[in-house]
Image 1: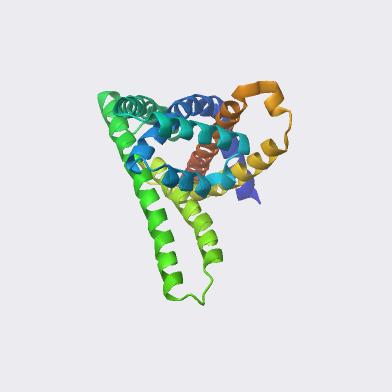
Image 2 (image 1 turned 90 degrees about the vertical axis):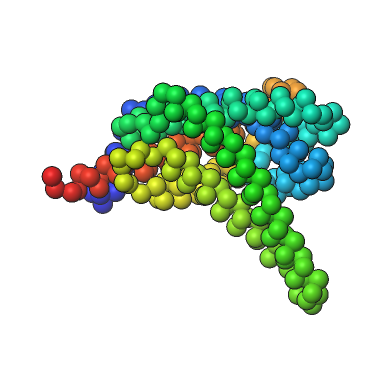
Length: 273
């Protein structure tokens, strides 16, 4: 019991000392700015195929509030009807600016938690741009894996028609989404982790993944049950809901990082000097 109490005390200290709600607000601003240009780039990577893009949205729909989903779908319709090379170029440029700024915000906050940044100065800027490109590539590869997994199960189902794999495909979707979220968060913690520290980031990544999936589901239920949201924000309701949801996701990521730091500090304290 004492160990658990010490952990929560240390977690609360890290949380308040680094003003994580404020940091999450700043991060969510950059993530929101990145979200729609990212959709344009992914739409291009999917070969400008509207049906494929809709399938991707259906894949994550259970974890997105209906209002945010409607806003994203409307934007996707706009992109499909107005897509051109200039739009792609502008979207790619915005991603490099906003996603790299988001990474620097992440790296600075996690660096404050652990006591020192991993990247500083010009190196921080260069790495943020490179990691932005790596993030875009990771998203594309994740989409390929998703479609590959679906196609494999469909092929098995065609070869063995007496088996009903519809339920397996549905369960695989949630399992794959959970695994993808875990890998992305783990990679975020890994690239922000100082080379001088040797603490584990697995626990925090797992906590963030579970919280992210749970918070997204609960948030979606809460927002969908709120009938006054569209009345208050009118046509901006979908954007407001999306921003609040992204803020919640950023907050969860920082809480996972705080879990890692709290565990690190307790472990260091337990080791006699």
